[in-house]
Image (tube, rainbow, N blue to C red; front, side, top):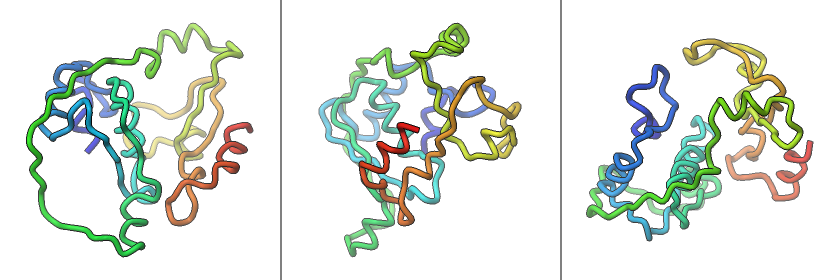
Length: 174
């Protein structure tokens, strides 16, 4: 789960653990090495975007070979591919973080640049959350001033696969 990699000191789960060495140790213990090809999947229609969170975290840590499996596990199963049950134990690997600074921006930088036309803030939560609803125990509702709304689920088709590239590009231009 993505929460495994969250900051244990944060009042609300979501902040990435700032201890990059700890993250590297955790990934290595899972068998994820710096040179491994990683394909991340989940159930895109019934999750909170965990696969995107993991993709971002690995990119932030400098991993170069990471991808999200289009359509996730539901598509895999629908195509009649093999599945297994039970835990898988992978041999430990060496993960060496090489953080990429531009994969994260702090609140101070956002605060300073509010109204700056070269910064676009995109809120990918549901419309009710964007409009201020508190649905998951957040400290308060609302959005960052000036942010645009693009709900993550609208980028997927009815089966949970990414919509065609032309549709994604059109959605991102609006």
